[in-house]
Amino acid sequence: MVGESTLSDRIVNFVLYLLLLLIALSCLFPFLHVASVSLSSHAAVSARKVTLWPIGIHLDNYRFLIVDTVFVSSFRTSVLRVLVGVGISLLLMVVTAYPLSLDNLYVPGRTVFKMLLLFGMLFSGGLIPYYLALKNLGLLDTFWVLVVPPALNIFYVILIINYFRGLPHELWEAAVLDGASHFQVLFRVFIPLSQPVLATVALFSAVQHWNSWFDGVIFIKEATRWPLQSYLYSRVTTRMLQWQTAVSAERAGQAFVEATPEGLATAMILIATLPILLVYPYLQRYFVTGLTLGSLKQ
Image (cartoon, rainbow, N blue to C red):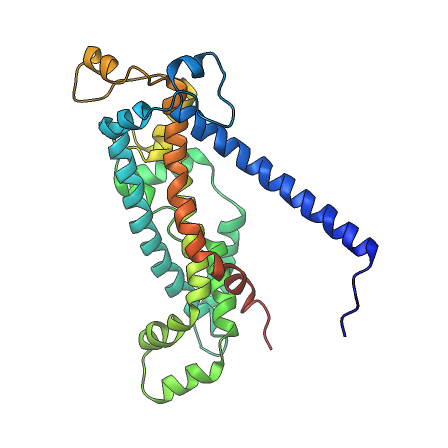
């Protein structure tokens, strides 16, 4: 039987809700300020009058980004990177986790392979050997340098292994007795039952690919082939307003008279944030299930 809440309980709940509300507002206010600056006029932004509401609303910053060929190309590269990178990562991680999760299955060298995975997760050779390795593999200045090196995330492999171990072992035995191969067991039994953890890992991997900027700057020379975050990093840190459009600089200045470096930077930040904000609610329900199921064995 649940007892009635006392006065002290209600006070504690009120304080907790108030604290959570303040934390939520502290996260929301910077986002509103960024959106307001991207929509405000040149004079208001220059005078630093913009706070949480746009002044002199216009869309010149967004109109400029739409015709900015480098920005559009970077956005396309990031979208393609997420789609290809997440697909390759899920395939490699699932195929790696399956044999490592079956303790009763004889796999030669499995212990050594596990040790190598753990060693690779804890230690790295440094940036220069990593750069030289990618150069020898011919991955520099290519799209594949963005998706191949981070394809096998060992931490995510461990999550999938724990989830696979939590599945009823009788399902594997029944499938094997019916003559199913290991690939059939994996793709017809394990994967359909592992949607929570796979959705969680897919979202984590997508966020990692989408927010990554360092590899584009280091491993790709041409800015036109950078992913969106690398281009955003370059523009925000240098504060340069480059008119990379199909029209001349004079016509661009006349067409986008209200565009400012601050407005363009905030508009790019907002556009770079929206895709993850739109995807997150659809996969949020898988988080708790994907990260807890399979963590303990009955």
